[in-house]
Image (cartoon, rainbow, N blue to C red):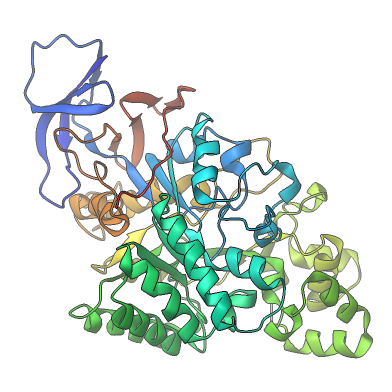
Length: 505
């Protein structure tokens, strides 16, 4: 099957200036670029002067964490953004490997009973997923928290030498079976108290296989600078390509964030480090993450018992952050869909409770599974950070089916179009954009492909896979996945042409 894309301004993904061209596709590959005015292809797409770019790569995606990679295999909302490839296994949580066949590591984000587990290893998981039709290409990292939880349960202790050796063996096997790298969630639960030397020991395996490391920082607020230094030191000592996950400028920490960006810039001569973020001011967080770290020890049953103790409960309330209940919106509440769309203030007022007491009540009611929107990011800081040479754009979200009982965050549906709109030089109101459109496209195509070591995608080149996106003024018009048209005239075509991706040694 042949498809000819005519009359487009081709942006190849490398950052080079766009140029008028036609692109010929045969089956799932790019066959030729040039001028083909009389070529008779089976399908002809007239770009009418719009931009043609490589399909966008969402290097930090949560469709696995919410299990929508199974419940919503089309991943339609991502396709409509121009995304053709997503990478899961983020922030220390992955769907494989599973030593005991349990998805307990993601229970705070979704109903883990919604999927029957028929795999243990990364290789088995990718085989299971390969038998399903997917709208986008999917690859995964190996989650530190997933393996550590299987090794020691809900305990927060350090791993023993023998446990680290077992962990290293599992990680190595997973990388050989196709995982693209390793992730940690150092801002969550067990991850917060994971010692430097434990991470460094595991990164020796990542370095050996030339994979990459993605990390949610240990602290994004008061301890931001020490967290950045820790990450940069790990990158330096382990010689591992590193991605700082959703590196956001939290309100109230402007100076620390700017200094952190400067530290990254100053380190580039000795480390290969990047960071991803999204162009919005709202975080999506699991409700249990508001709790002090000491409360999380021992797992949910211990937390429930502690909340029943009046003295402990009062201590917890005093240590909760000061929150504006009207700025916290309930996005997802498994088994309690009537709560979706309510603010924490509304929920608390209905119970005649102060906001922090209401927060604990919401945790108890939803068994700690509620997810909320929290407006805590400086959009001015985001715009400045997006210009950084090491910035990569990612949704840090899942693609939800319309029937899924969830309030979709903007980044689930608008991350990439919004970024392109912000970046393009000629905006509708005549304002100056953040950067040339060619540089913007590089940040969502070849740069994430380079970090991943992803071959054959991210650049428009003869012989590469035909993952392509046509857009104009930030609006996505056509999306092609592995040579098949998944979006046409900004409408989803119901064609699922994605593939499961495996890292090549």
